[in-house]
Length: 173
Image 1 (cartoon, rainbow, N blue to C red):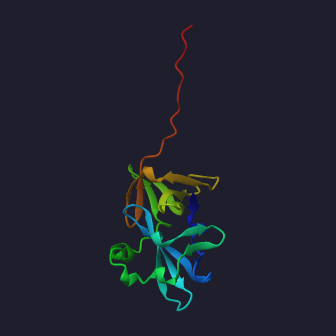
Image 2: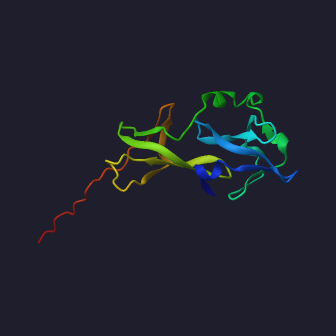
Image 3: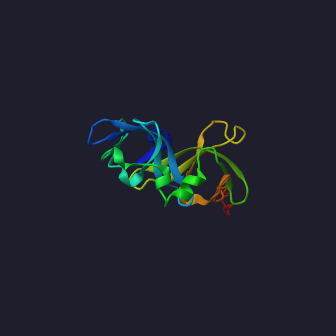
């Protein structure tokens, strides 16, 4: 099931053991190498400290309530996550990145993304185009298979289809 970024953030983390809220999700920890959400930054309800909820510790996601986990001890301190240290240090944020094509054509900026909740891979990104390119103010949907490279400043995608007119051959009479 695909969920937009706004529907996975600002949600509660609920404990099965106590039946109460133990944290509040603030942001996603995105690995730019494979566009996977490795975890979620949370603010701990008990001490206000910033913690990370790893995606594999999520038992269930309920769109209206939030994330269900076993207990409070699944929340990890960022300094304890040695394998994710490089990803945490990058502090990669997808929203706001420029999107360009391989031929250096500017497409727009990322304003949202869709996550497949079982694997936590980002499947689609949505880029808002400039007003000059798009008078309707809509978004351009880009599938993860169209992405060539992700850098600190931009996302490089395959060239878009150009408006090419197809001319029917003249019929011989």
